[in-house]
Structures are given as structure tokens and as C-alpha cells.
Length: 211
Image 1 (tube, helix red, strand yellow):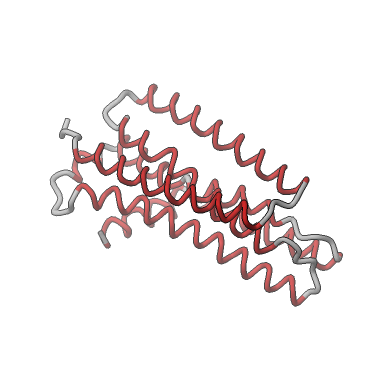
Image 2: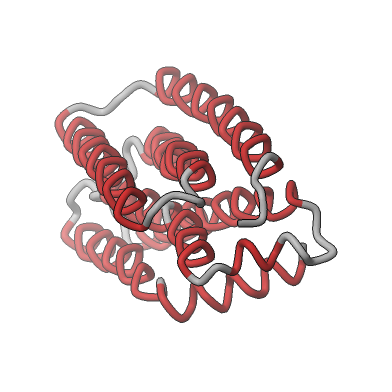
């Protein structure tokens, strides 16, 4: 699995590195708001989490387009491991966004920023970061033997749904601060769905033929 991570990290840096601009912009905005004594725009990290954590699905699409996923069936790697690597990568990227958010909150605390709701927002960001992989990866594995047009259509539909959900959650977070209990429940539900999605993707990939 170590080799799979190396391959995907290389591909990620080559094609998805621009995603780092999103958390970087969030950090800049938070520092600016902290200096001005305004409440931090932490809900903006929801966008960062969603877009960063959808990239494992993007990498799988690249595997399918380049026919690498067919070649992977001949490697001394279990099919379950090729699925696990994508989900673990999503967890790592999500944890990375969470860490950047925590470091930003710490820096803003030193600058005297308003940190109200920071803990609750961390729960929200963590939950929203898991959703893209949860929704997209099973579909991507299921459609790996379909035409590129079909994959693109379904990908666009899922992307639109996730994008709309991120906008809605961000707007609601700005309008009214959710309770910590509700966001903890949300994170728990999403984690369960993430595990189910992982199991479904594994079952789908195990049934795929080399074609």
C-alpha cells in the first residue's frame, strides 16, 4: 500500500496542488479578521475540506482514464488495498485541513481574535470533509468500466450536489451557530456512512473483471 500512496501523492501534487490555495486563503482571511477584532470566518474551511477531500475520487478517475486500474489487478496488491488507499488518503487530507484550521485558530488567539464557535465549527468541517469521498468513491468504482461520457455526467451531478451542500452548510453556519451536540451527531453519522461507503467500494472493486 505504501507504493499506492506514493503514486497518488505524486499524482495529487501534479494535478491537484492548486487545492492548497483554498486553505491558504482561509488562513489569510482569518488572520485579517482577527487583527480587526471580528469573528473569524471559520465556516469558509468547509469549502477547503470538501474540495480537498474530493481529490481521491479525482485520482481514481485518472486511474480509470489511463487504464492504470486494469494494470493494478496484476500487481501484488490486494484489490481491497487499492480501495483502502483512496479512503485513507481522504482521511489524511481531511485531517490536514483540520490541523490547518486548529493552527489558524491558535494564531488568531494570539492576535486577539474572536474564537467563538471554533470547536463546534471544527466538528462541522470534519464531517463535511468526509462527505465527498463517501458519496463519490463508490460511484467511481462502480462506473470504472463505463464510458467516459457516462462517468463525466454522473461526476458532474454528484459534484453539483456536494457543491450545493457545501454552500448551504457554510451559509447556515454564518447565519446561526449550530450547537456542538448537533454537529457531533452529524460527524458520527457521516463517519458511519463513510465506513459503509468504504465497504461498498471494496465489494464493487472485488467483483470487477480485467476488461
